[in-house]
Image (cartoon, rainbow, N blue to C red):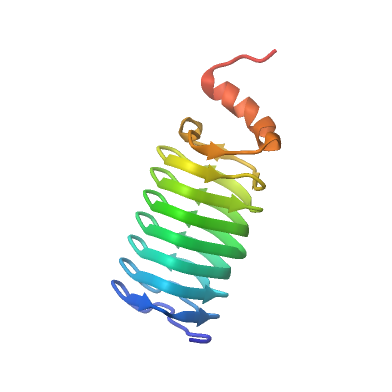
Length: 181
């Protein structure tokens, strides 16, 4: 599908299987509980993406431009996001398995209470990352720039590089009540 304009449509509970969308506009389309399987979404545009409790399996998203992406409590398996700008990505309570997000600018990433296994954020710039209550395993942040992070108690299972450790050291010390003189 090329240049689909689904703005404001009620597509809740829909199944999208073996679809390719190029330049689709899903602004304020209701996608709650929808399922995307074996799909490619290229140049996806949505100032407001409403896809809570949706399922994403074997999906590629390329060069997306998303404002507020409400994807809380969704399930992602074998998802790849490559390039683009995401202002607010709400994955609170989501279950993420085998996910790669690369080359993205993400102003706010909310992974509070999410479960992430084999997730990598490569070469991304992340303004604010919330990991409060998250359960992570093999969660790779190496090569990404983190400007702010909350939920430091949930960093178990995260892989970082030396430079990221240097930047996180003062935050970790404060979190643990360590005084550095």
